[in-house]
Length: 320
Image 1 (tube, one colour):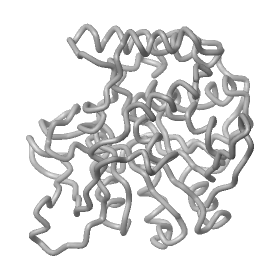
Image 2 (cartoon, rainbow, N blue to C red; image 1 turned 90 degrees about the horizontal axis):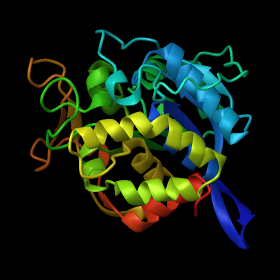
Image 3 (cartoon, one colour; image 1 turned 180 degrees about the horizontal axis):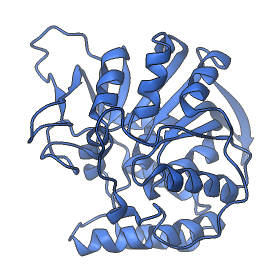
């Protein structure tokens, strides 16, 4: 599943990884983390945190900041069925804190993101780690084109859902990624036999102390300076709403993808998606008691090793 390379005298294992993403400042940290520890074979990009024009530009800027040749693929600009509101109030209208960064000179590949996912699944059949940090539109489209996709993917890690209904988007129980495109999440959760789910509630349990996080950025390299600038608005937004800690959901999911043994508590259950209801659309519904005898499709991450999580963050910005 992964290769090894020498780093500081040790062997560091590197996954073949494809990241489906909608950058977004939390996606940005996850992508920095992945390039530090994995062989990232591509970024497939969807609309979500902001529109596709911005998420694509942000992905291209990130690979430039990292100084890598990772290919970037444009995907779906809208949810499968219904229009949804983005998260520009949190991430900035451009998704990167309205910093007016100099755009990358790089260009996206001509291949659609859903087709890139399918091609990669053939090229790296049995060894590909797929990390879904965005609304699941691209992945759902890929599944509809080829229902055998899960058979070729070694591991799928999804950032999404709120497993006891403490969401952060739209209807009362919905989390953003699932709530933005519930139909896509339904397609993926129904078709994928077993995936790892890192939800919003786990993110809340693994927040980061603001002062310690900002001190970490101050110790880092050019990646840290860039990340500091694009997250200033989000950090101010979080503090302004009285959040005691900084929450970086996609980074937590990436930590689980990179180091599966970072998980200290998890449970396997069946998870579905509510598609109807004014109060419940987009909810992730967990059969906690396994009463309906449906096979568990999700390994739900409940706790991780916080110190290891924060070490991965520090390494990603040169502050390890």
